[in-house]
Image 1 (cartoon, one colour):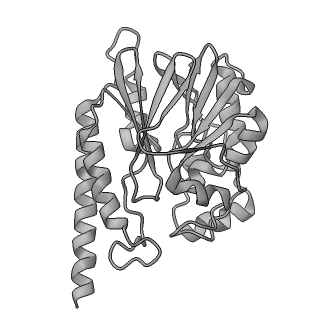
Image 2: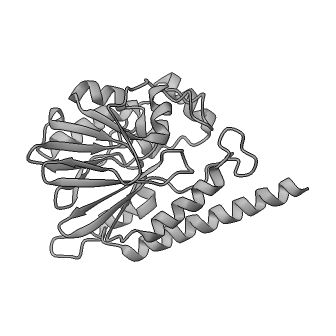
Image 3: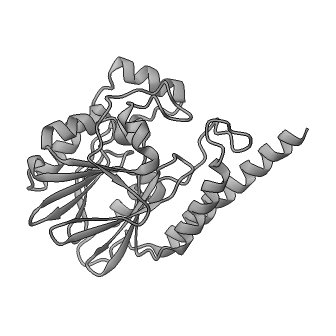
Length: 279
């Protein structure tokens, strides 16, 4: 498989977060998930193309090093990267937004970001409550999104659901694909080092996580997708994609189990931190 090297400055920042994963820059063949929804990301970082007759929507720019990979995947599917008219993201961590400046320059796309994450992407990561040292090129936001906003292009309509906690503006995207409800989960996990109790930089973080799980539990999901392939077992599902076989990405039970597991992890970490704070 082709691998793309990460630049030295970005590697330093990612090492500081202690979550460097070689799969993030490992290319895989792009593929159709269903209807007009395609996967154009790496093995570990998800990026999605929504193709329409009036241009395309790209969800997640991933790392700067992944921009050539995303472009090559779009082209391999028979589309033109220059036809991407709208760029969206799941949340303002460098592994999902660091390539936004390059992709915006390459495509001229309008960059649309959820309100809570706008200061972070426009500061190049400096305004992040947890990772202010994790810098990337600052990118001007063209449209500030709010919970429940719709993003429309051609025959596609995506709905932005604010699911904060992981970041202040973490966004879960939903859309209809061939009559199915697709859910692209933004990120419900509690990263190492997150302070859920007495967090002066993000006082409402625990309440925001609770809100997020209520939102995610209330969504109807047929096609289960997310910001990382690991969320929805992409590798295993790719192996079972065969002509005439059921679409493995139709996985409502997997979605429910994933959300329930992340909620349990959050509650356990919250109680652990509350107990520590009392002693």
